[in-house]
Length: 210
Image (cartoon, rainbow, N blue to C red; front, side, top):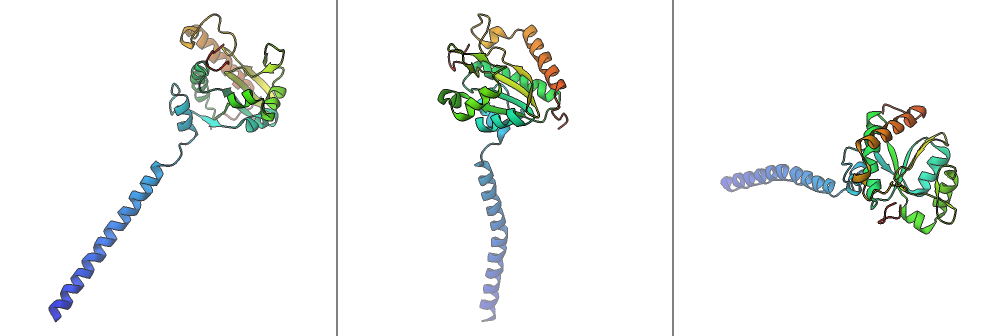
């Protein structure tokens, strides 16, 4: 009888040890699996949409309504583009390079395509705020052609750039347009615009009708 009881105790101890060892690992495995299925952060998401930039970027997604609020009342760098626009794809690379060089902590990014197409309230608000800086469509209305970049300080537009948004000087591709000289000129213009702002430091395309 004592042997039976002793054997039973051994079995119980072994089972408890197995449970102790197995379940923490099992829980950890589930947590890892759960982490793997989480949504990508903004930098990862931007890299998926703008693969030329890669994951080492500082872009933060904003809706058109949020972009309008920043342009009208906030401070920051607002980049409006369309992910399917090859000119935006290339422009984002140069913008990210300069912003990181100057230790800007983030660039607000808004894909303006759908709002522009539907002429939403947020889009109209944006064109109203930027009316003095935008180009005009064939009907004489201000339009956000992309890529479009605004540097805003406390609701005042202190810098704006839309190179290659509408005029590409006869070049059919960004690779053809962006010579070393033009890249250097753009980057220097962006540096000067950022230097004049109070942003905290230290922390035409057939596909998209841009």
